[in-house]
Length: 180
Image 1 (tube, rainbow, N blue to C red):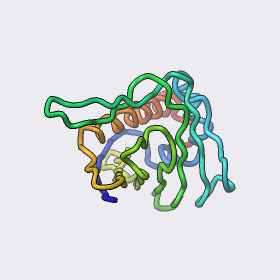
Image 2 (image 1 turned 90 degrees about the vertical axis):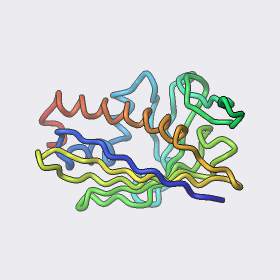
Image 3 (image 1 turned 45 degrees about the vertical axis):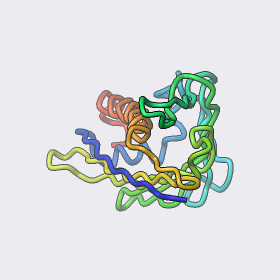
């Protein structure tokens, strides 16, 4: 098993406490509301919803799937596309509402395919100079065997996450009293 790590930063004018409350503390309610065309619901399947809990994100049928394809050098890649990914399960490791940090792992779901054991996300919400937020994410891909996770594969998943980030940002900017 190998581990490949990528980092990413996203900036917004939304305050970090508001973004943390939305994306971490109230995600179960807000994400399905903001993205009903993709996310059916998020449910706690083990635990009380806090650290150690397992949450299941159920997708609208037919909205996401994995596409395995070979590139021009014959190397196989997996990509997200429209199709039958039914759900993802995440285990929560850290929810620190004082330091605005969360850590969780994707532990089950079609997106892991036959190449990944899990994906761990470490996310920090920091105040930027303009009073907004810099969201810093470190993503660790825990692979099966000697498979090396490629940056292109990471970027495809990151693009889907940024769609969610943008939907949340737009909602909070349009509703300045929510999570204030």
